[in-house]
Amino acid sequence: MRHSLTGFVLCFLLFASPLGAMAARAETALPTTYVTDWAHLMPAGLYDFIPLEGMSASDWADPDFQQKILDAERKIRPELNEVAVVLPGYMVPLVYEGADVFEFLLVPSAGQCIHVPPPPVNQTIFIKLKEPTRMRTYWEPVIVQGQLSTTGAATEYTDTGYRILVDEVVDFSFDELDIRLSAVEGAAN
Image 1 (tube, rainbow, N blue to C red):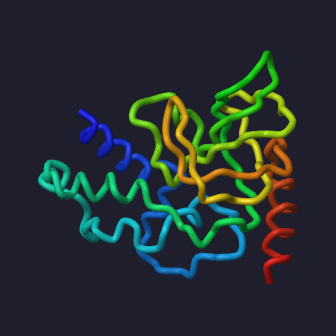
Image 2 (image 1 turned 90 degrees about the vertical axis):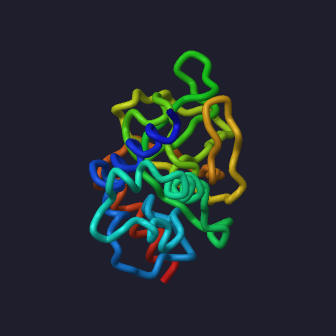
């Protein structure tokens, strides 16, 4: 069952979600001094084993193909340890009291982590806050700014490939995101 669900989720992530842009084969240099996009968290060529002409039913039924998908989901970019990060995403609260959230998962799309299987490890970030933030619902995106750590976490719901040592969690707006992205990307250049 896990393999067929993994296939469905991967297919959704690659073609229907905002992450679909990552499926493109155009090789661009990924930044190594900052992270401002979910695609930056995935190693280059991560899904190069997927045929250019698309996947067939026999691909999905092939245990080796399924294992490649599972292996790809766990790959991270260790060279990103301790780099500046600004990422928009959605909060999946883990530890909270009332409306105060102390720990949460940051995921790229609304509704992730409320299904099985969970999103890929390289697209799930563990957040532990020094001071709590206000709980957001699954349709309220946030922007998280801080320093990326490639030391993942094991939670009761899923494993993560990364953590963010948080400076700030703010409500999402395109203007706010543009200001923060420009500052981080400008400092890196």
